[in-house]
Amino acid sequence: MHRLLLLMSLITALLGCSSKKKADLFVRNARIYTADSSFAIADAFVVKDGKFLAVGQASTLAGEYEADSTADLGGQPVYPGFYDPHSHFLGLGQVLTQADLVGTTSYDELLDRLKAFRQKHPEAMWLTGRGWDQNDWSEKTFPTKEKLDAAFPDVPVALMRVDGHALFVNSKALRLAQVTAGSTLPGGEVIIQQGQPTGVLVDNAMQFIKRVIPQPDLADKASMLLEAQKVCVSLGLTTVSDAGISPDEINLIDSLQKASKLKIRDYAMISLGEPNLNYFLKRGPFQTDWLTVKSFKLYADGALGSRGACLRRPYTDRPQTGGFLLLSPSELERVTTLLYASNFQANTHCIGDSANHLMLDLYGKLLKGSNDRRWRIEHAQVVSADDFWKFGKYSIIPSVQPTHATSDMYWATERLGPIRVKGAYAFKDLMKQNGLIAFGSDFPVEAVNPLFGFHAAVARQDAKNFPSGGYQMENAVDRKSALLAMTRWAAYACFEDHLRGSIAVGKQADFVILDRDIMTAPKPELRQTKVKQTWIGGERVY
Image (cartoon, rainbow, N blue to C red; front, side, top):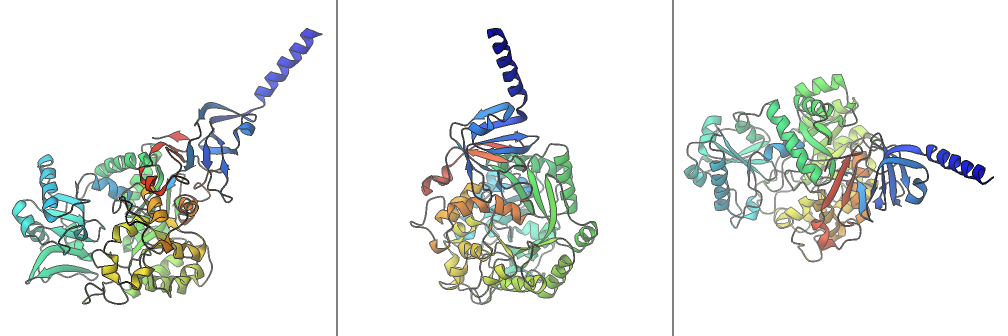
């Protein structure tokens, strides 16, 4: 009898084991912010074939699943993989090959960095760099080319401003591009002093120089993308974006992903242009597990820092100008009408209150009311008080970058004045319109780290935790909203919320493990948060 009972117990145990469902990974003993519709917090999840198979409590899941690998996280915080719905992924790769001018505090420091870079790359046909911002210098006016000419008389130099909306070049570059005091392009400006170009070209005028700079080939771009990937995954990004790239570049990304060389996901916006319109309007949108191509990137105006942003009234610190549009209202209306007749999303760069006013009205004329087209205003940086309601009326998504606020706060009031600046970087007011907002970084314009944006959104402070008490705190957002804005809401803004953006059954297993809980850590510590692991599709990539 005893032997019979023992045999039955053994059979029961074996049957119990075999009845468990098979999985690849079992994560347990964690604090998991799912970012799902109920914002549930779990302590375990199971992954199979790159997707979340179950999410809940370890005590329950352990009895139901048997995994090849188990990770006990000892209470560490876990979040959905971070999104950057407005960035320049390929652009980051390109910047990594150029002189880094971010944070220079003077013209002389800029020259010192260029000289050091040139010593390391003496063979380069052009000396290129990015990141200067005259607003960070004691002399806050645009630089002029004389000192640049003296330091580099024989090699053409082209230096992109931090926002990507102005170039500073030397005389050698001007001669190669045949730029003179009479050179003009609509939607741009060649800065002139004493009848001669100073070396600064704003917005569309940059095309004079870009036409003569040697461009990297596809092999170079592939290397750039792989280097950019290393940076992004180390900072917890699992989905990035390319805000304006060509069909060839989109096909390159697709091929690298299919070859499993590029493991990060990409939301690619197509650069506006007649050939691109003709090609993609016939082809239509497409989406894989790794790549979404469903939107066009439009530019309405330039940047506030270079005074190319289009304002409804002149700049407070330069009353002779109100900025300018990069495309005419009639052209913007023509293009948005074409996109409305297709299945493509329109994503328009709008910085100034005039550009935002124009595009909100053009969108509204087509969208008419509530809809699911998910058209976006990129940056939505300065919005008139009488325009906020249009985001909600026409279901327009504000796609913003929180660190723009903390970078620009030192001089934004000088540009806009004390009243108009209250409608700038108004994230909470924008979020109220549709009950959601998308947070990105615009890297490499700003730092890649998405946690810098999280901190800027909730604390409204920069890396030095300045100012005390925060900048225009009436438009700070709560931590829950900030996390959603860089996960599920960002995925929604990219038509990818059915694929990822939350830790939920059936969604792709993209998640990140941090060294502290950003939902509870003191605000001054948020920027010190480190990524411990990044997983994409159930595979550890960092």
